[in-house]
Amino acid sequence: MSSQIDKILPLDSNGSRASVVPASPFLQPIGDVVGPGTSDTAGYNLCEAFSDNIYPLLPTKVPRYKRERYIEDICVTCELSPKQTEFSLGELPFGWKQLTHPGGQPYFYHDDKKIITECWIWDQQMFIILNDFIKQFEDVTRSQNWTQPDGVDLLLEVTVEDGKNWCGYYYVSASTRSLFWLETCDLSRHMSGVRGEVSPTHIKLFLESQYWRHWDLFPNVNKATNAIYDLVANTIADARTGVQSSRTSPINQSKEDLKEMAEIVEGMRSRMSSASHWCLGRFMYLLVTDQYLNYHGQFGARLNSLQSIHVKKVLKQTWLFRIFNLLLFSAPNIHLKTLNELWVDELTLRPQWVNFFIKMNGQWRGHIKIASILLAADVAFLSIPSIDPSNNMSNLRSTRNAAQIASYLSVITSFASMLLGLMLVRQHQAKGYERLDVKVYHDYLHIHVASKWGFEGLAIAYSLPYALLTWGMAAFLVGFLLLCFVKSTAIVRSIVAIPSALICGLIVWCIWMFWEETDYHWLESFHNVWNRLTGKHEGSGDSSALVQEGETESRQDDAAANSDGTVFGHDAGSLEQDVGQRSKHMLLFWLTRAKSWWGDARLTGENNIPLSQP
Image (cartoon, rainbow, N blue to C red; front, side, top):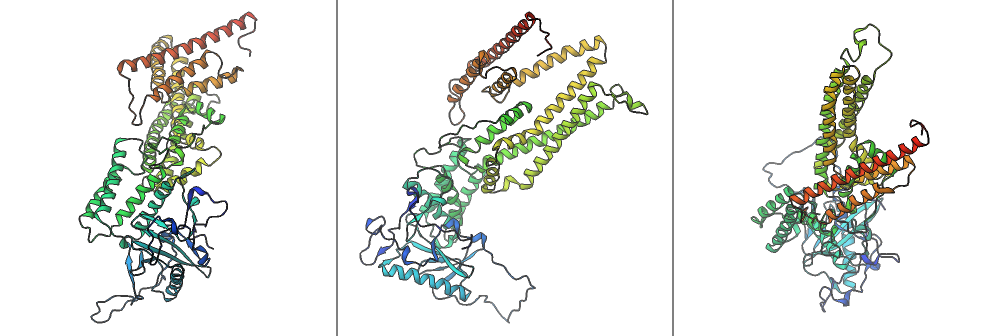
């Protein structure tokens, strides 16, 4: 059987009981009518009466957009008869009528039998195949004295694969907004995006999303009422409220998209009699699918995008990533934290990822501009005669001073920052992530997270333009200061040294004040690397206690914040106190470290061991 045919497998001995849908009681015995949900018919399973070529199907598996229907590539021949005003392919078989989806796909509907199909019944051979499958359904239901109730349609998806005829089917009920089949079905592998045990109400929510997908595919056969329009309008309004009032809403639509949805629905309501009502199915399928993925109405429902409804996994960073994190000014750690926050339970929210990639593209473009300016400054710096006297000589000097070497390093790092920035911008702009479907985002991220390094490799790559630019600026500053201090008088050195020291102090203070990692992970990484180099046990001494104390305070601050990011009990005075506490911790840390170094130096001097030796 071809891979294009996606069957819902019948339940076997290893099937998951949590996602099993029994044979539906919707088919009513003739004469003694049994209503929906009655247990008298729940035991029927008609799959044995069907041939092996008939299989259960889901609306999301209808291969509308994967059909291989081709038109011969030849010149058009068209000749009209005199006064011709009728244009038709002919007469359809009795009871059938052709409908056209607003997107252009034709399909066929039988009013009396309540059957929908995309089988091209203008082809006599395909109609014969379809009719054979219809007779099988009629024979099976007649043999059991069952009839199809009002408000229930049957979809038949007929395909021919390798010379064999196949027919997928499902029944769709408008009264319950659900689907059912004539046999027991295992939906486990089709309920993607959720894990663990699922309740019957959760399964019902999944089937409701499939119902709206059916409406999306075949809108012309569904009856839209004011109650349906009210349901859709209220669902969109609730989604707009959540997105508008919370930055971490788990709804996979942006404010702009929801606003346009509401306008379209209200516009279609005003001309209900002539509208196709396609928008109802398309919009509700998206919104109900969000509810299904977020366990709407279930125990442990996901209330915001940062909430994991499963046991949170502790992701331990590799030592290679920690080394890169120190070399790249902790930028990979910041990107890794952001990527993990946007990938909670592998749930891909398109608006958040669009904003993330737009933000990253803006940053990379800014790095490219600054790197180009820095590269020009390096070239101009190297062209100064006092920097390289060989500029005025016929033969080049074989040696280079420290200022030249620092400038060379600045040229290399700034050029690398420009190159990597251009590559990343082109990579993400060529794909056009702001216009892609959510599945493309999910596939792209799943490829990286499923690799050996997970998101660590992506975080390092995203931080390289910034980190290399920072190294280039630092190298340029070192080269400039070397020029000022090495080849200058004492007066020049004094004039340059004082403001340089003050400015460097201000830079360090600003970096510490506005550091994006408030939980001292960067300090802990520094301690771990230092302890490994000095042979000390990790986490020992006062410095470890300082880090733990800072982390405890950070966690307490995080616990005081609600889901909307509002922090309770923090006025201006408490914020100043927090800054003072951080200053005290930092001062204690460096005093403790200086004391340790001073003790080591005294011990080294007492033993008469030169300080330069290890």
